[in-house]
Amino acid sequence: MISNNNMVNRKGIFRGVNQTMTIASLAMVSAFVLFSVLQIDLANTVYNGVKQWITANFGWYYIAAVAVIFVFSVWVTFSKFGDVRLGKDTDRPEFNNFTWFAMLFSAAVGTGLMFWSIAEPLTYLQGNPFAEMAQVAPGTQEAAQIAMRITIFHWGFNAWSVYVLVGLILAYFAYRKGLPLTIRSALYPILGKRIYGPIGHAVDLLAIFSTLFGTATTLGLGVSQMNAGLNYLFGIEINSVNQLILIVVVGSVATFSAVSGLQKGIKLLSQWNVRISSILFLFFVIAGPTAYLFGAFFTNLGDYLANFVSMSLWVDPQPERQWQGWWTIFYWAWWLSWGPYVGIFIARISKGRTIRELMLGGIVSSTLGAFTWITIMGGTASFIELHGVGGLTDVVNENLTMVLYSTIEAINVHWLTWPMAALATLMIISWFVTSADSATLVICTILSMGDDHPPIRMRVVWGAGLGVVAGILLMAGGLQGLQAASIAAALPFSLVLIVMGYCLMKDLYTSTEYQASPSQDPAPKVNKFKPAPALSK
Image (cartoon, rainbow, N blue to C red; front, side, top):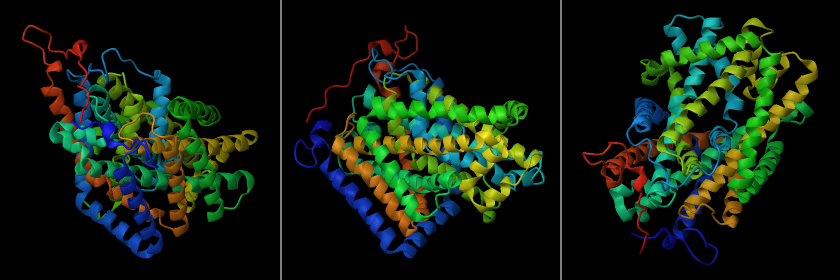
């Protein structure tokens, strides 16, 4: 086999990274940005045309693919291979459970739940196909329950199984088999040393594309909510100039965090995220409709579990209304397009855990975290809309970015309104920074052929590049097209992920270290691990 050490340069400006991959990725990013800026109308037409074509023709495929991924995740979790350790048998997790969860959740969620945990259920409250099928009128308590069910579904087991399964497969081949921590390594059982050639480069370039543009899109959308928060707090005008300033500031902080590495910047920010979020949640629970929220927690849990299978397999028989394409298919494509980035990061922080620990901890705890978040914030907003002062659906319809602040204000604890709005704005910034710095680290890890500590100068280059891409496309009005392009990238990656799952299963069943003799217990013989032979030229 060809060593990954021979795939990176040892001197010059490309020292520590793969020169071919670095040049190709920079060229890809430059071409995409230039096309989006110089041909704005054409670019948006092309990107949205691709998105609509995929939605119209492959909507059923996205539904089926994510359902299969979830089923496969359940199988590998509870199979006889669940005790296989992701590393040597003597390896143990680098991070404790709280820190590990905080880092995983922070990298994957970003500002998404800050934005959608309230806006999404309030949007569904006004009408959706599931309410229509149940003959439930919009704006009722029954409609609110269905709205919460759909929102939790989009952030639940199916979604997290995509991220965690990618993380499992990559951690297995990197730390159990001694291959580089890149997407290409998962294809080794069928490609062999060809993973170091053009096919491997193409797969990793797809991962870089999804990571950079997906994160840049989130930054572009996230600064809109940051700007709205600063407008609410200090009256700062909402405009492109202020949003560019925010991109520079947030991008700089994210780059500094990425340079600091996992043990300092990313780890500390992730822990900080969970702790300050808990303060805001306590405010919603104590100052808001306390009894209603406790009841909603159990009601939502039962409702979600009772409808999980039917929702997972539902394909809209009336595609002309486009609801499923706007929401569920959009979400599934978005999770898939972020799969390479979040998966590599999960793998990086999960060395030493067993397959079962990673899968159960990643999927169940993250789903429970998202479920609790949505129940508290979305449930409070729904209560205010139905039983309180109301008016929040009007805010959603007028300006999505302001509904979080309107909800805090409607809780009507005047002396805490401004501090909680300030805390929410800080959370938006902090959650995004941890996504951006993680994305920067992932891109550099890929370019350095799996090095856990990629060159610092590359982290600076790609951290700055992330902000530049987001800023240029924000000014050019190309974020909508960029979002569509990122979603389109989910289609080829979904095929890659299916092949990755097959490769994992193939290796598990063919590796002699997991095969028990007739006189032995059929459980995997994890106590007799033999590391992969040293890669040589």
